[in-house]
Length: 545
Image (cartoon, rainbow, N blue to C red; front, top):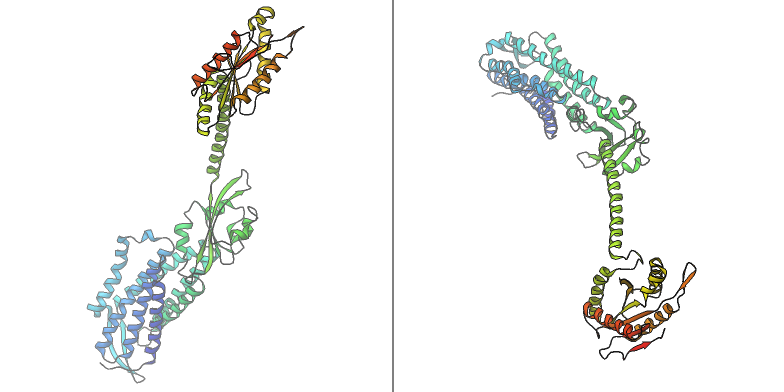
C-alpha cells in the first residue's frame, strides 16, 4: 500500500477531526435532537476522513475502497439531518418506523450500488497523474445523479421545515435556528458549487472540507449561545402545550421566552416583552421582584389586579450550566383562582360552622346551667351538689384537708307563704340565696337542696372555723329586713354542720350527719346552729327568736 502526501488530505483530516470532536460534544448533551445531530457530524467525519484517504493512497483499488467507505457518510448525512430537523421543530410524529424505512430505501440502495454495482453508480473510475500526484478520476452515472437529487431534496425539505420554525420562534430561539441553518447551508452550497463547476470530479470536492467550518460553528454555538442546552423542541413540546404560564429568563433576569398560556395572562404582546427585565411584568403584581429572584427555589402566591381578580401560584426554579453556575431561571405561573374561590367558600363555610358550633356550645352551656341551677334562686341544685360533693371529697382525701357541709332550713317558712303569699316566699328565698352566696368564700358553693332547704359546702376548712362562719351567717340572716310591698319581712334559720372526715367519709354519710344536726336545731327551738355530735346537743348554740 503506497501513500502520497497530498495537501488536500491534510485539510480534509483537519475537517474530519473537527467534525469528530463536535460530534462527541453534541452526543454528550442529553437533549432532544442531540442523537441525530451527533449522527450527522459523526458521518461527516467518515465522509471527510475517507475522502482524505482517497487523496493519500496511490493504488486504484485502495482509493476505490475508501471511496466506498466515504459513501457511508455521503448517503447518511442528508437523512440524519432531516431527522434532526424534524426532532427539534417538534415534528417527531413524522419519524414513524414506516417513514424511516421509506427514507432509508434510496440511501441503502445507493450504498449497495457503490459497494457492489459500481458501474451503475459511476460510468468510469480511473487514475490520472496531475501535478505529480495520482488522482482518482470519477465520471458520474445515473445512480450518482439519482442519489444527489434525492439528497438535495431531503436537505431542501429540512431547510423548509427550519424556515417555518424560524418564523414561529421568538428572538432567543431564532438565533438557534440560524446557527442550525448556517451550519447546514455552508456544505450544501459548497457541494452544489462543486457539482456545477466540475462535471467530472477530478478536482477536490469542497463539501467535506466545509464540514470542519460547520463543526467549528456548532462548537462556538454550544459554548457561547447554549446551543444543545435549550433547543426549540423543549419549547415546542413542553412550554407551548402547557396550560401554565411560562417565562424563561437569562442570568440577568431578562425574558427570553414566553409561552401562549403566559401571553393570555399579560396585556402586552409577547414580542414586545422579549429581552426586557421580568420586573416589567411583576411590578404590577408584587413589590418584591428582587427578593423573588434571589433564591434558588421560590414559591409565592400573587393576586393579579384584573377584572375579576385572579390568583397565581408562582414557582421560580434556577437553571444551571455545565459548571453548575446559574445561567437563567424558569418561572411557572399557575392559575389557582378556582382553588382560591373554593378555599374562600370553604373558609366561609368553616366560619359559619364555627359560629354554629359556638352557638351550640352556648346553648349546651345554657342547658347545662339550667340542668344544674335552680330556676328561682340561680343557686346550684341538688343534682350539682351530688356530683360536685363527691368530687370535692375525693380531692380532700388526696390532699388531706377537711371539708365542712352546712345544711340550712328556714324557720316557719310556711307561715310566710300563708300570710303574704307565695310571691313573698320567693322574695325571701332569693334574698337568702344572695346573702349566703355573698358571705361564701371563693371555692365554696351553695345549693338549693329543695323547698326552703339550702346546703353550703366549704372545702379546706376546720370545724371550729366553719362554726364561726356559720354563726356569723346566722346572725346576718337573723338581722335581715326584707322589703315586700308595704311590708318588711323577717326570718330565722336553723343550721346543722358536719365535717369530713370526722362525721363521714362519703357524701351520703356527711349529708346525713349535717341533716341530723339540722333537725336537732329544729327540734330544740329553731333559730340556731348545731354541730353534729353523736351525743346529741353538746355542740349546740341557741338563739331564741
